[in-house]
Length: 266
Image 1 (cartoon, rainbow, N blue to C red):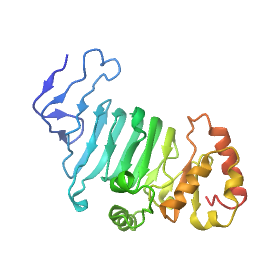
Image 2: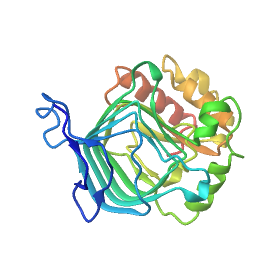
Image 3: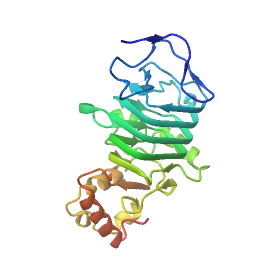
């Protein structure tokens, strides 16, 4: 049965997750979530939120943060999220630093990919199996209301550009085994993303302009990613073929052809 926990619940680390109605998992779930807790949709991390490990938990209909001003967005540092499940949950526009996401499940169903909207990253590693579909997008407002327009004038994009001016690297996805992922219109500078050179490649607006990239894509659907990247207005991006995708071989072959004609620059 549900057991309501009314006081602080130790997540692990120096901080506690403070929330009323922070429920233990339903009966029968401990085999899947042996130490699980459920973060409800109304849960909010305090700012700053630091030095915490969250393991084998569920985030249900989790929408964080809800902020009136971009300047109020929280900064999370030295966070480990391991073997957690996210159901119909979107996150952003947080700042996440010096953190690791390791083996995770995203459950979205008919609502499309789960979204990291306008998040800014510094020294964040995503590794292990990433089940389900996720999308890194420049902002929640753009994603919901202006997706057919260039994103470069969006206030969150401008704020993240200022943030990234002082970052040596943002994301390391080189050991992430994605099932489905969109990063081609994220606004994260491609040079700041540590990648697997075979399945995660960098293209620029200028390199795309100089070659017949549609023909080079062949049977691969990566032409859609390139087209949407161009529509976004960003200067560069990362194209990814998920290692867990049935289209892996076709996409890797397309990346080789795009590299041969100079579209893939790194």
